[in-house]
Length: 314
Image (tube, rainbow, N blue to C red; front, side):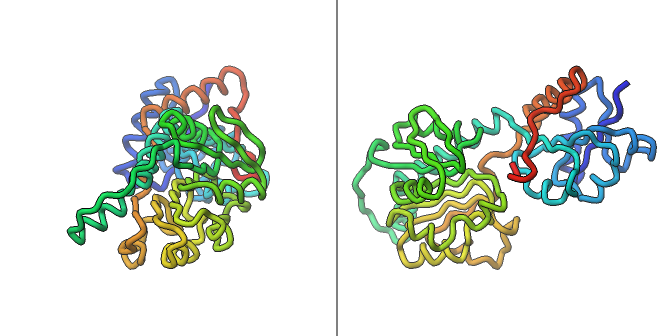
């Protein structure tokens, strides 16, 4: 007989309720309950938890977890809060999220490719001036991170005609993409890209990766899109690069602190576009179907789906 599945979240009831409803609809054969609704016996028996930014003490309240299913693709906060030797963590790998992220990468690449920030500034000054058009084949996009999200974003960019270069820590390939790895590879991608797009997971190795040295290594006049995690970019170094004109514009969807404080100077910076973490929202229905498939496979075979490498952080 299946044990109750725990749902652990620090979301408000407004957001938690529809997620619970979607999960219960996708898994009608299971009993899914928030932690506060579990009896002491159920907490002891529970072997699976579905989590969304859970409190570490809530995870610790379930002593016999076999594995943890994350509702998010990013799991750095979850992994950081687990003790050494804790249960395996399975991140959400949802094709719909990959499609949505690819859509966002393409949209905001076009935004920079077609000089929208420059035309917005001209409008504010009532200036009517046309600028030279560059074909996508004359415009290079550097993707940092070639996981599920990066690979799908690369496909969309290649199909749109852009020159696409991709970088990852270890060698990978993607159709139509010139790929690089390692420190030398990162330098090559930064130096040759008109727009750099960060889609990397946040790990000990990627935190602060885009610092003053690497931002300076970027092509003069290039733009930056950060759709990964805020701490990957050293914000004071980015602002300095924008202020001195080495970089032209930054589209930022993620920040060290979210929501971005109203006191932040980024809101009014003329060369920064602030987005409220909307590049690839989790789709409740498709996420629930992916999670349901993972849990059913586990119930049938006892195999835990491909899980996060705790040491690497993804």
